[in-house]
Image 1: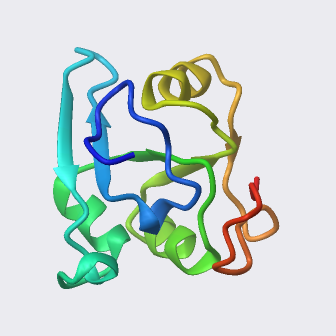
Image 2 (image 1 turned 90 degrees about the vertical axis):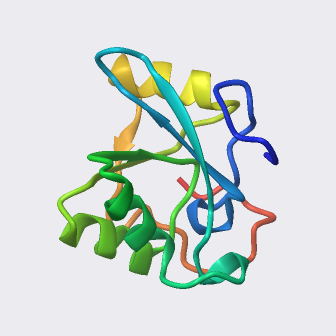
Length: 117
């Protein structure tokens, strides 16, 4: 969870990920971006950074309701419940095995000893 990339494990919580791995679903090109949000001493919220990067979909293990709503407001689809590394998460999403995020399945706190789905 430090370097990013297809073999990096997913963070338990979207905003707490030190990097964001972007995958072009058509070309399969991979780019890695550091999380420069206020969560890591930068500015702005993680959803704002994702919007600025041009993403249309976020795939994560868990996400809080505020971040999920911000992404939805930016017209970015959010899918939760993925496990393992980024490669597995992308495969789960592309095969339709992930659930679209809703207020009901969003994480409700910042205690990450759970796996919210």
